Length: 365
Image 1 (cartoon, rainbow, N blue to C red):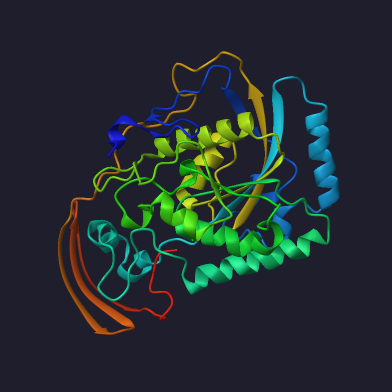
Image 2 (cartoon, rainbow, N blue to C red):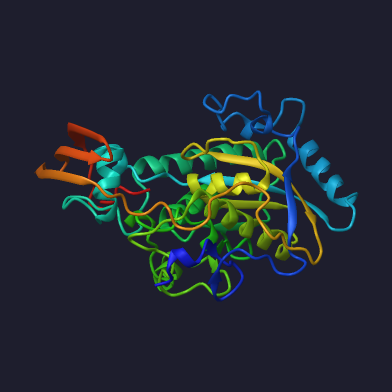
């Protein structure tokens, strides 16, 4: 076990882990190029934004025009400047939090593997709703191809199964064929590392068997070396992990159009590292944005350029909780909950209906 107190994230292209330090010549300044997508515009309401509306492409652009403008940016860029288009897809979250509420989840259930009837950890699969999100996105992409949508040339994915399944259902019959793209599994795209069992990944052997068309980044360990039941990443850690993903892709991948399949919290850190406006990543959404990188040769910052907190702070929540759980039947979980979380005490009853099918009993997605 690698203590999260000694790392912010996995060094993506190395065989060891440690705090963020870009290799000499690999540091770059990132910014999002405005004018292409509505989600880049501060006037766009993130709450009402719908990615099904042409993925947010501005009305004054067609997809062929967009591609040509990005290609022109790269063709005319000075040495050391590169532009890439990121399609960030968000996997469906762990719905067990909806069953028990935030307090009960954080105080107790997040470190359990299930409730005796259904399971959500480690690394639960997509629910039926999560599968529907991915299939709908696949239909959306296919409709955009007719209009000249530029397909990804490279694909990277979180090692958690709900993201692997999301990628397969979204892009499978388009790009995951022999001779086409082989997505690369990257630790840097996983959800917040530590504490919650849905975020504990499975073995490399298992993932290779489940996803035969996937490759793995150099140094990908057989077992999860990053999960801790008592320590979790800070927002600052997520920011620097997002930087590491961008650094690795920009310095090792020559392609321009890149698909990333990850999680909401992880994606928020990556968006911030890219210089994107704060933009909530809704479950099941695909958010494209254009990133500019200006390399700063043989330069490493002494301190972060933004005010971030580094080191573990999202430790396992300390709560005085009394739970009485009974399974009424195979589809209902009932909980009477009394929780003391800091100075706040709440007593509440939760009755949840859980649909369990013979082929999938997971509530994590």
